[in-house]
Amino acid sequence: MDVQLILVFVLFGIALLYLGRTVYLNVKPKKGGACKTCSACSDIAEPLKKKADITS
Image 1 (tube, helix red, strand yellow):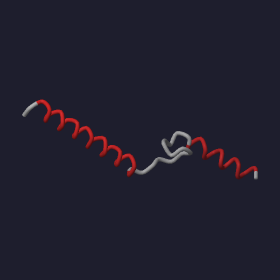
Image 2: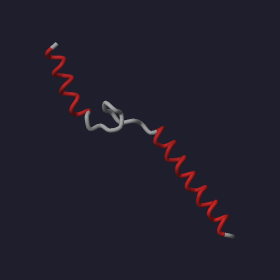
Image 3: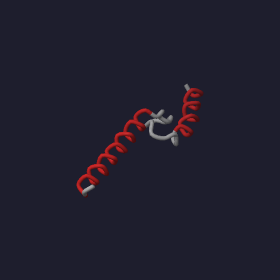
Image 4: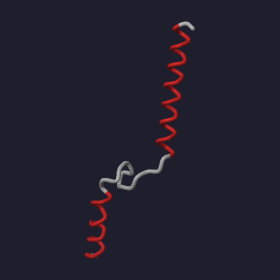
């Protein structure tokens, strides 16, 4: 095997990993929260919602 063929296989493998990661990130369930990226603000938002319901 020459170096050029090895480089092609390595780049092809990297491309497959990238596509697999992209598909995985689009298919996995999203976490709760305002921006849908993490659940850090969901714990903060819950008491605020309850407080808003009490005052209205």
